Amino acid sequence: MIAVTTFAGRKVALFGLGGSGLATAQALIAGGADVIAWDDNPDSVAKAQQAGVKTGDLREIDWAAQAAFVLSPGVPLTHPKPHWSVDLARSAGVEIIGDVELFVRERRAHAPDCPFIAITGTNGKSTTTALIAHILKSSGRDTQLGGNIGTAVLTLDPPKAGRFYVVECSSYQIDLAPTINPSAGILLNLTPDHLDRHGTMQHYADVKERLVAGSQMAIVGVDDSYCTLIADRIERAGVRVSRISRRAVLADGFYFADGGIIQAHAGKSESIADLQGIDTLKGSHNAQNAAAAIGACLAVGVSIEEIRKGLRSFPGLKHRMQPVGRKGSVTFVNDSKATNADAAAPALSSYDRIFWISGGLPKSGGIASLAPLFPRIVKAYLIGEAAPEFASTLGEAVPYEISGTLERAVEHAAKDAQADGGTSVVMLSPACASFDQFRNFEVRGDRFVSLVAALDGVTMLIVPEKGQ
Image (cartoon, rainbow, N blue to C red; front, side, top):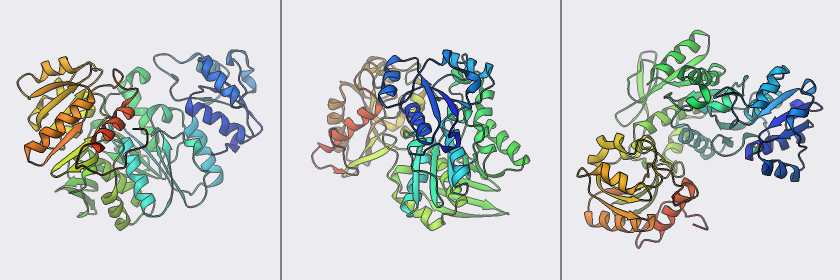
């Protein structure tokens, strides 16, 4: 745990007592703050009380006495309208911050030079975060991985010299981190997302820009107009910028060409990393992730040889285009994190002969947008509530069966792929939520892995977790 000492002896109000909120309250208390916490969910309040956190309705506290108001990132700050606790804090002139800001202040107070890499973007940030952490760990560095990727940042080990932090940041977290100042800040891309929470695309982009604007070195993807403008703007403001692209040849920066990452600088270019043969980094979207990781790791002192070694050994992000087993020329790929059509597109575009397991609880729009990728699909195996709808969309374009359950789909897809005789993949990339059959996409992905492991003759590339 990172004890938040920067508020020692002062009163702090906190709203939101989910996983990260409770961890934040405990970190503040450990650092000597006088915390009063609340949540709209009585069960969360009761859990916090059992954990020794002082609770109380924030409508009834003395706001003038509070040094800060710490808000959990899932609670609305601006749109569709501010949460009632936000209105109270603003009326009292109390600053509103989040757990990432508390981390930033602790680092600044105790180890300002320890490397801190922060990653954001609409797509690809979790894979990029995991890849950077893997490169650092595989090179023997003391590495702490957290943030939006699933581990609350204040549950990490405390900042100290030589300790590297790799933190995935959502737009909600950045919005609550006004002084965020990473050693290397990454903005991968921007497409419309979370507009219910940000109001407009421009406001969403403005929030994301804050992360790279405060960086010592900003790594910015320039394959969309918003990010291109951001890169130009912060560079004019004096920030060192390294541009990355998966589509264009750059005069200066890192770009994808000929199956690898090219670095261009001062009129010269050279290939610095070959991605061919790295199954966990297939596709141009992963080339962008790799380019960002390379730029960030170089910025914090990692050698190119250490980076190349880490790229080659990257096991992939769990449940995201993750090769989990192999039998002969058939590879089994777990892409359970693809919970809508847009999320499934990268995996489908990365392989040529796919035995596709899809379906679940359908999302708006279905899979019609994936039609250009249908020629890559040898056969589809449809499960869950979406099966009839997906069958209608596939029509005569793709052979399919309505398997119903994941168990039948894996069994039939594996048998058909083996009989096919060519190099192919059996891929779970559902393009659907999981809730009709599974608690979440993690459980769905774990079940897929266990079913693959039970097939005869499959060599597993990962070890199934107990309980799968």
